[in-house]
Image (cartoon, rainbow, N blue to C red; front, top):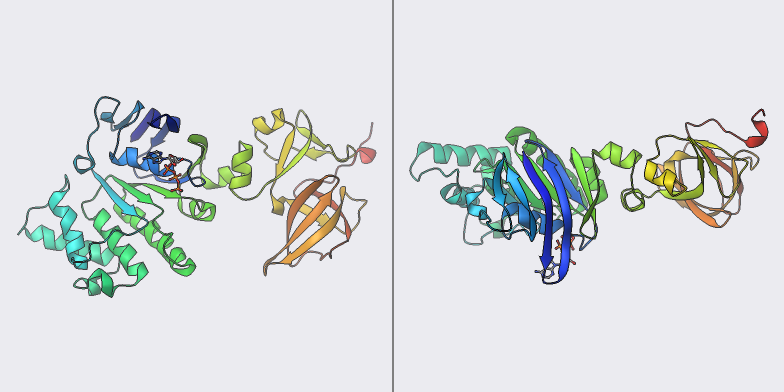
Length: 356
Ligand code: ATP
């Protein structure tokens, strides 16, 4: 278990990380998600030991790895690293890339031992590069190069694998394939993984737990489904998927949209912080569009975008503009149509229908 306790990091007078607390369980796959400049790489560098914290400590299995007084350097930690740029050495073959860390890592294997060749063979097989062992980086495709970087990182059997945007240099199809490869590697190596990305789809797809960061602070830590269905802050609600932040009044577990107080929406799992600020975060696919403007809230369709499996509607509702996604199999609407809007999974509640 790795514990990041109250860690802050300053670059001169600029604070890049503010009091970060994070626990990484053994074998856990964590994605660190956030916009450019929010401090993701800084957190990774602290976990690796490239620099020390300005405040706080980092512990692994109750041993202090870093504090303001002392920082255990990367080569003395049992970690592996994969970078966005692959960072391969042009003069080394695939097999030499895997051999290299086995000579310098804390888990090194002595030259000449049978175990060394066996480990290199096993690792290359695991990442599907056994047939290319004698090739140089210039003779490999982008996906193959990234596999070499992965093989090099996992060869010494690290407890912790740090990955900084490892898939961002690859095209979309290859990214999807490599995501599965990384999930497979995770299952087989049992290492904890900290995977930095600014791609929310990637984080949702790959991780056990997502850490969402914004301006050097952690906004929320949760498993993907909890993060998506129950965001706790406006930042998380709009950065991870696109939530509509509907304004209104919370009356215990009933919400009355400001636009039309005759409507009442039930609480389908809204975090307390939104209740305090009078907001109902609604995912585009959580809305139900109906042909009759008498049902639910009234809106006017201003844009229609066909997306293959879904139709994306932009709908003007009073002063607000909402994004609503409907299946292609649902009722279709055109620009200018007046529609009724309600929440899916919620009975249509209209004040005029509720008995006194
Ligand atoms: P990106 O997604 O763009 O890589 P990031 O979330 O990884 O961004 P960091 O690289 O951790 O962000 O940087 C966090 C903040 O700290 C940024 O505002 C950056 O400009 C600043 N920063 C990073 N390194 C230094 C440095 N050596 N000196 C001064 N400021 C720095």
